[in-house]
Length: 181
Image 1 (cartoon, helix red, strand yellow):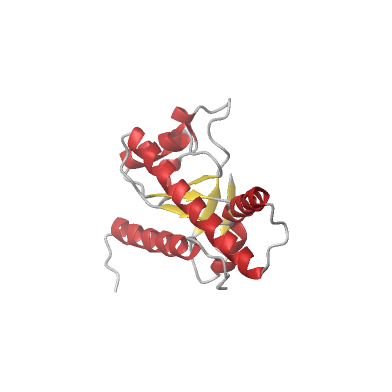
Image 2 (cartoon, rainbow, N blue to C red):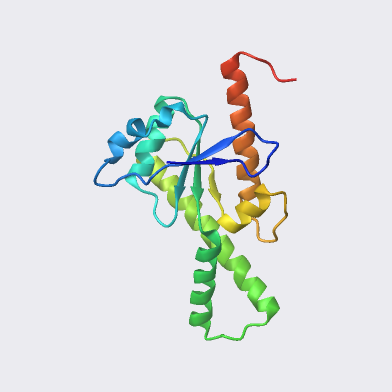
């Protein structure tokens, strides 16, 4: 388990990176308890290409313990680049100008967002879990946003960080019985 201080020194949040679930050593149904996920303010379920049964198991257990969850698809920049390459291949246009590149980027971005949200919604419905927002991010953009920069190709990075910080703050206030001014 990796423990990381928040990049914003004013922030008192700590981030934990836990080993992947669904390994031979820890089956998905035991992962939640074995990793002590019940102690966290919130859980980020991070996936790349596929939303798995292990992800569903974590979401179910979080719901049981009333722990807020955030579903995050990572590597958006890589997926969009791959989609653009495929679009260029299909159109036989290797030398697209800037305007064409921007058009391809926007088309690939929209396709990634729509497909991801549709697939996660279908997986949640199949598992009898309520629909929830899926945040689509790239790590480089997320790091830039966390450091206070404004990258040009933001998808959900700003909203994800805002939602995480807001929920963690509210949860801590509720648990302490305090009231925020």
